[in-house]
Image (cartoon, rainbow, N blue to C red; front, side):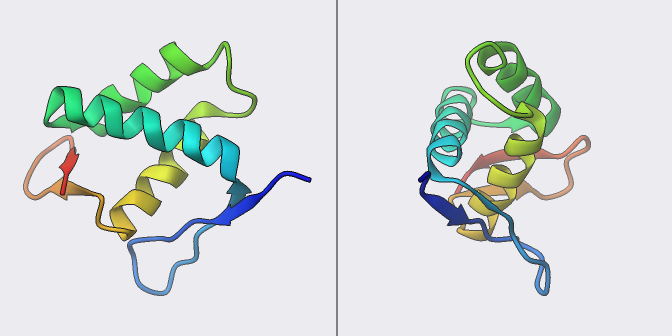
Amino acid sequence: MDEKILTMHPTKGKKGVNISKKKYDVIKDFLIKKIEEAKEITYQELNDLAVKELSNSFEGSVPWYVVSVKLDLEARRIIERIPKTSPHKIRLK
């Protein structure tokens, strides 16, 4: 049986989702690596890179997992949205 992880949500009162730990780790490692490389990156650029680079090897909806894991990383204070950026940009905390 696949190990699961309950993600967190940065907005108080909102719940995360239960997802495969293996898939969570793939997306988490990818997001952190790309943010480290870029220093700052828009959510759209990050999502586009994930779709381009992971779609062939990843089972499931890459954009859905990117959103879920990104929100979890924000809630855990590993990454942060950069205030007053439009479209919003992300960086490591």
